[in-house]
Length: 243
Image (cartoon, rainbow, N blue to C red; front, top):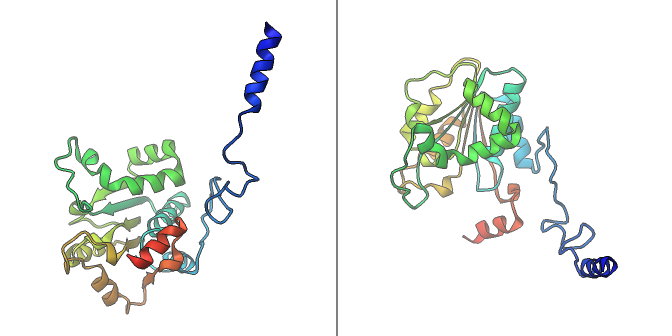
């Protein structure tokens, strides 16, 4: 009986084949390459990303404009984490406007952090990827990393900090001006956004106007990323080219 069961198990196992194998052409959907390892040092994957990383290193204020998938937020978070880990700043402050993308979530229960969590999820994801869940939780608890809505930034002076303003296309001219003037001593600020993806009414977004006005200042870098800098699925670049 035992031998019969063993033969049956071997026969069943012989009929099981993996759907994808590393040697098969279908193993990776993106140009035969899929890197699943953690990269301690993030490297640019396009000329635009290289220019953005250099600008962040050289300027106290960097404005990154570009379509979805160009790595604006991820590179900004990466540079912020590097600065904190190397002791060049004392804290990271991340801010994002609480603007819904075309549909209302209605009233959200809980405290401020609970209410803002859905809007700030992309920032948490990037931080978690660079720090790990345990270290991120500890830094948030001790205040070394702060995530705040735009509405709570007025009146503050941010010294010795690395500030990232994400999705700035959903800020008005007045809001962006208020955020920029929060910059204090020994601080770096990065403003990211896609002017073509604003969820505000037409003409209300101030990102493009602010970038054009500040581009003439020597210590302000304005980096414009394009479709060739998209590092998501190749289909994203194709879709953005026709939409």
